[in-house]
Length: 191
Image 1 (spheres, one colour):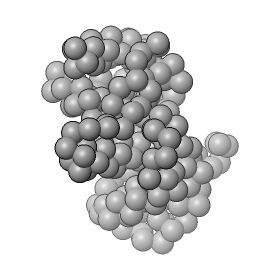
Image 2 (image 1 turned 180 degrees about the vertical axis):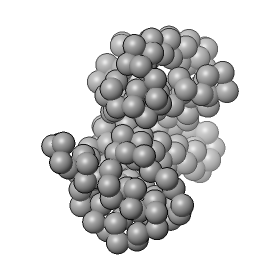
Image 3 (image 1 turned 180 degrees about the horizontal axis):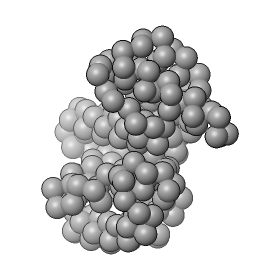
Image 4 (image 1 turned 60 degrees about the horizontal axis):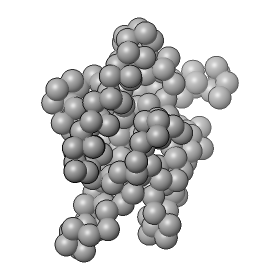
């Protein structure tokens, strides 16, 4: 994505946050491909034959984002971090509904690898991962947000640092600690 596109996205986000509804319509064509890439990344870890498709996930996230009013967007990295969080919540809601319907059986699977994110980690169900992230947020909210942005959103170390307003070194350190913490929690869950 070119620097000009990044600036256009940031400007449109600010305009949308200031109440310009037309800015949202101009924004979506600029961010759609990236949102689809995020959704595809999520869906890659899902079971074969999953009934929720990539496009449906993007559309559902878009519908939920479009309802947000008075959001003060700072930049594109923040937007994609929020979008990633929204997609995660959609999939977790879907997984919980599916588990409820099957009385606890057949949880959705997500691979814990950053594209090796949690190096060599076992397949873990999305609900368990969500519960572990929620527990991490109670202990250290910043680390939980950082995992969400890196693992689910695919944001770079620099983009996460920008959103969280910390140094890249801090993000790297938090990333290492959060991976260990989550693996420990997920291992406990599995036993």
